[in-house]
Amino acid sequence: MRPVSFTRDFVSHPAGSCLVAFGETKVIVTASLEDRVPPFRRDTGKGWVTAEYAMLPGSTGGGRKRRELNKRDGRSVEIQRLIGRSLRAAIDFEKMGENSLTIDCDVLQADGGTRTAAISGGWVAMYDALRVLAERQGHPGPEHYLTGQVAAVSVGICKGEVVVDLDYAHDSTAEVDMNVVMRDGDFVEVQGTGEQGVFDRKALDALLDAAGAGIAQIQQAQRVCLGI
Image (cartoon, rainbow, N blue to C red; front, side):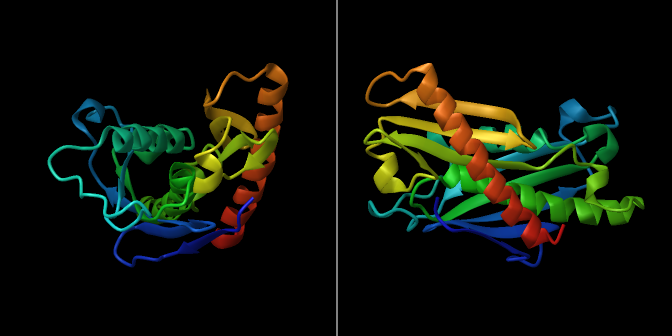
């Protein structure tokens, strides 16, 4: 597993922000707090969390990536939906009231695992944004709104061996590739593909066990960063 780090308050203006690094993959995540909700949430008394994801033009090694202006890239849309679903699994929306959080994830440098880094960093940024909401509403802290701690990691089988937190070199040659999101030991989402063939239940169990161990390390780094 690659070195993992979280740097809080990387951007001063949003309610929460974090620079997350999984090895050479670096993602900046901001959490913007608004005292309004989307139309489908109005008059429900419940909050909302959504996410957006983009890659900066110079973030990849394959040449400049064009900015997504009028039309979103299908991959980016898929990833930001995953990020949103994952982080919503950690929130009690009734306690938020009609407030919303937008988690913006911008990839500074991509070397595999950008979506899992964004989810893990998103939880850190969201935690700090909920601290601001708690102060406004007179609650003790972010834990008032949280249902758990969320983190994610990629796992795969490369040359017959289980690898945790795949970089681009591993990801591009993996026989099996999987993204796993967990909340306190339970699964939020599992995305797995046999890139070069099928895989059996034994391999699946090995991958999920490895993902659980990797996510435990990531969650420890999250807690150290936040001082909790």
